[in-house]
Length: 155
Image 1 (spheres, rainbow, N blue to C red):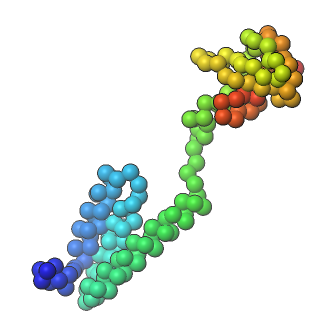
Image 2: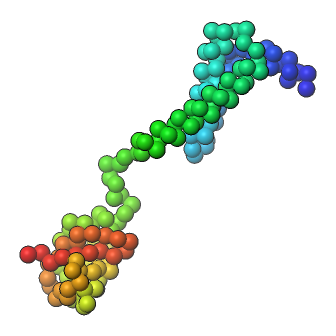
């Protein structure tokens, strides 16, 4: 225990840089940004201790903890205000990718419901206004909710 206390009394800027680099390196193996912000906080602490080398180790550890918490909270708030965007928002929403596509009904829609073949699969469809639509009519997909596509006849 005395060795740990003695090490803490000698806590220098390069210790913080080593801790920061270690945490950021470990982040490569973690799926989230859990270790990134404490790692960056440790690097910042290294610069602070470089400027103020006589800082007490208790204050250093406390300031590091405060920086780690504040940077993590700031990151979470920033992420909520700036959600990630995609140039392909419907990539994993297959039904939504069919909106705007025109197809010919192979089967009639009875009571405004039926199914159509798009690509290699059959999809449940409903007509936009619940009307019956005969087979052979061209329709356009106007909406997708879950596994059901909404279609309207093409005029």
